[in-house]
Length: 555
Image (cartoon, rainbow, N blue to C red; front, side):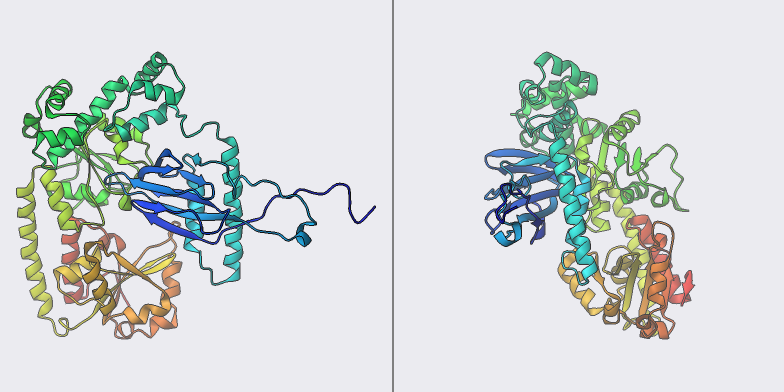
């Protein structure tokens, strides 16, 4: 043996990351500042298009791009479906010759990929990135080590997926080509383009497409465009030329011909015959419809708690579907119930795992933004779409009279006008102080009670989009008011261990509201739902709580 062996080991790199960030909407993502680092971009919600190195990529939830060094990425979100996700750099740790014995480094397909890799529907990896982002600044060494384990497990799975991927970005399956058409129907897309992308002949592709969808590619695209035109008509657009262009047609005359071919009527006659048969993809919007005297044809929910009330009849024919149903299952239900409209939400409150636009072939789809509006704006918008604005204003006028009576009743009570009221929500993994949504709406908007000063500042600056503020137990005294409304979420097994830990703490026991018996635990099902029916019931409960002390548990 000698000090210079004839054979030397070639070694793979060791990896690390230094940056992980979130992005939202339309963004420009520059290459990493460190030479040689790759970028991992993961889509956690929404949809859009990305451009890198002269290539374009259609992105949706669960997709991942691995970008070589020096690659600039531009992301354009879809309208009403802002893309959101995570971006991380992947770096190779440099070793000295002493570390490696002068060994030859092996090429890295992770930190130094030769071209952009686009991986589809890898939600497992997106979940790992989310965990790393949430714990990106670990306080304890245990969490630091866990981060390293998650990071390397993610890289291991990433390599497995890359090695197993048989297709490139330009190669689509038949099902993927249908999805692509559903999301790009406004553009000029030919059957030849779709057939080429799936590596099928024109005739084979047409036959397979019709077997899958029941339509030829051109019929399917026309159906999507007609439904998009219906959406614009329902939203109040009047200029037919503008509607034509926005739905993918060159002019209003061509739109009118296609519209009549598919519906038997002209666009001008569509609204008068609209039957208001609508499905809802988020539970609160079912209650908006019920308050208007309408019953959804299909509703996404795991229970009927949002659509039952002593003052309303029980739904007679509404089809309830779980949140984990597929786009195909839901589209089938829409057709079977003769649904004329789908009322969806933006990704911030999506209750299905796919884009609502996947349903446009079954019925027009209108997105009612969740966080950008308060419940009254939701109510009025849905009423406008369903041609029930008069009923909505009548309902709101009655509610506002009840609000005024409740406000006067609360104001007549000694000390209530000056009292600071805090809404504390205890979840298994966090503490939240609520703003003027959910339970906070009735307290701060309807009754005019005072929130904690810091929450008042957030409400003033954030408007309807401010939901809540996450705090630590040690910060609770800074937010606890004269009265505490405590809403508890048990864990998935039904355990209330999280609330026990809070209530047993010295911090909790020393709060003035607790010492004065002004802290109340209330039922989350009574105070969290955010829709007209629930808000009215919460108003009545608040009066009983503050005037009569009636609640589930008084501490």
